[in-house]
Amino acid sequence: MATPDFIRTIRASAGHQLLWLPGVSAVVLDGGGRVLLGQRSDNHRWALISGIPDPGEQPADCAVREVYEETAVHCEVERVVLVEAGKQVAYNNGDICQFMDITFRCRAVGGEARVNDDESLQVGWFELDALPKLSEHSLFRIKQALADEPTWFKPTS
Image (tube, rainbow, N blue to C red; front, side, top):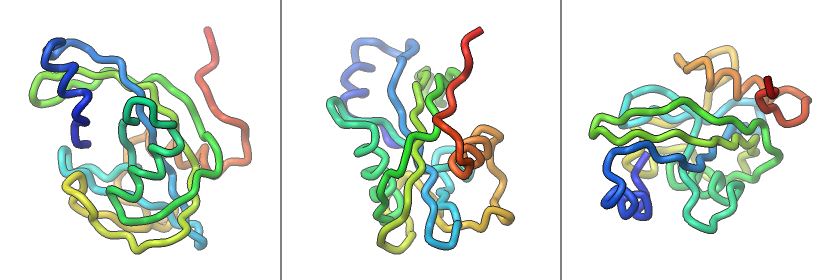
């Protein structure tokens, strides 16, 4: 994902140290039950569409914005799927981040899936029984989005 300007400003004084950041992910489904995925340009892996909210931006609004910016698909948020602290991520430039992710189930309402910025190599709709290789975490989020269950969160110890 592209680094937002406000993160660049923080990095100018914080250096590469761990930053705790908000993040959103979107499980976008079309009318046929297919899921929208993007092949990331930074690591070439297929993944759910995700991003960092701008200061003051509501998480659901961020999910809608990120989906459009990355795929040209218009969507509406249906519900929160899960809330979870992720693992630390170390980037090639030495930056370290950890995200508090809010995953949303979204419904596509328009647009044609295409690469719409430089964050993706490819984007597309996938049948659930024909998904490209995804992380276990992405598969779990898709499973939770399809389940008729309340919002998932990691139980306390």
